[in-house]
Length: 381
Ligand SMILES: [Zn+2]
Figure 1 (cartoon, protein in one colour):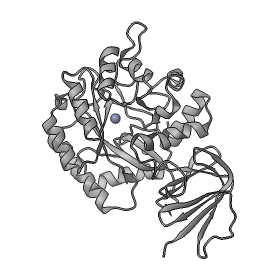
Figure 2 (figure 1 turned 120 degrees about the vertical axis):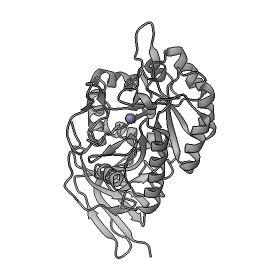
Figure 3 (figure 1 turned 90 degrees about the vertical axis):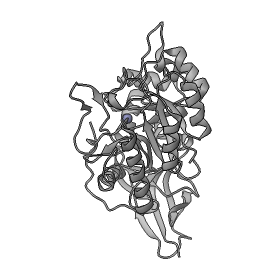
Figure 4 (figure 1 turned 180 degrees about the horizontal axis):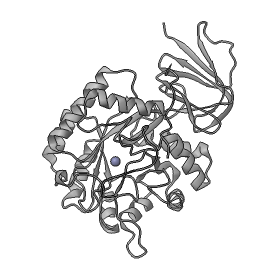
C-alpha cells in the first residue's frame, strides 16, 4: 500500500507556472497531482500538511559543492561526507553533484569509491545525481586555491579509470581550454556523456571558442578563476558568456561577483542557461561570510541557495519565480533528469521545499518524506 501525503493551501511555483492556494498530492515518493483542488477524493489516511502563507517549490539542485557542516568531500570518511550532505539537505538541496577538488590520483579514486558506497547504502541524504570533477586538468595560473602539485596534463587512461571506477557516474569535468590537445579530450568526454566545463583557465577568447566548438557546454563559476572581459580581449569569460549553448554556473553570494556583473550575466545569457551554485566549502552551514585562503585568495562560498536566489532576484530585478529556474529546471535540463527532478508535476520525484513569504527555506520533503524540523543554521553571508 502506498502512502499518500497532501500539501495544501500554499502558493505553488512549479516553476513553469504559479498556482495560488494550490495543493500537491504525493503518492509514495512521487508527485501524483498538482493544482487547485480540495480534500474531496483524497484517499483515506492521507497525511495532510497545511502550509498557509507559504510557498512550495521544487527541491534545489546544486551541481557544484565541495562540502559543508565542517566537512570536505575530497579524501574524507563516509561519515564526514554524510554530515556535509545533510547540511545541504536542511537548506533545501535535495539533489546534488558532489564536486572533487584537484587531488592525487589515489585521493580522487578513494573519494569516488566512498561516494559509490554512500549512494548505495543511505536513504536520508540528498540524491547524488553523479560526480563533478573540478580538475585536475586546469591552469596553474588560474588555479584559485586548488593545489598546484596535483594539476596535471589530461590523460585519457586516467579519465577512463575514473569513469570505470565511478560506474559511469561522472557528469561534469572542468578543463582549461588553453591546454595542448584539449579539443580531443573534450570530444572524448562528450562521447562518454560527460559535460565538459571550461574553468580555472587563462584562455583567451579564441581558444575558448575553439573549446566550445569541441563540446564545452558549461562554464565553471563564470568570471571566477578565469580570464575576464577586456574590451579588446573578451577572454574566456566573454566567450562563455556570449555563446547561448553554454550554461553558466554563477556564485551569487554578492562577493564572488560584483552585483553589477550578476546583472550583466542575466542580460547577456538566456535565463535558461544560468545555474546558481554554492561552490560550498566545509564552512557552509558553520560560519557566515566567504572563505579566504592563507594567501588571501577567495574560495568557495557559504551562501545557501535560497539566499543566492534572493541576491540574484535583487541584483537583476527579475521576478523570483523566474530566477527559481536557475536551481531547479535549468540544472535538471543540463543533467538530462528533467522528467524526474526540478519540476513540480505529476510523475516527478516528490522533492519539495516549503519557503516562507521571504523565500527562506522552512521545510524540506525528500522523496515524499518530510524531514524532521530542525533548527536551520543560516548558511548565509
Ligand atoms: Zn569549486
